[in-house]
Image (cartoon, rainbow, N blue to C red; front, side, top):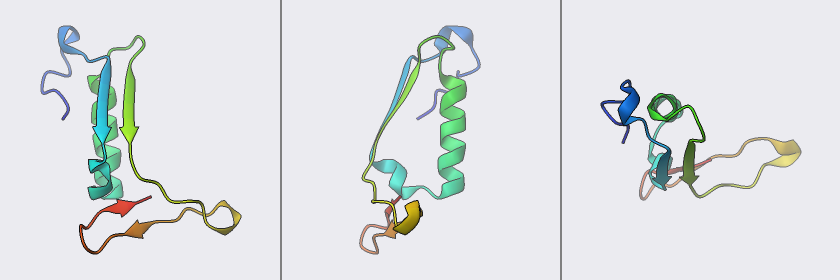
Length: 76
């Protein structure tokens, strides 16, 4: 979760972690989350750490997505 105080200089984070829930976000929601997370980080030596399941590239390096019908997660 992004801090509601992200615009305050005293409350910026040095690390934001996401362990697997991003697969439940749409592309636009994921982009929005990462943009908000970036704003919440300190300007010096900050990280966003993401642990997700990933798919292999398709033929010719084409992006592949897999939607799991059981849990509605999207593997990118």
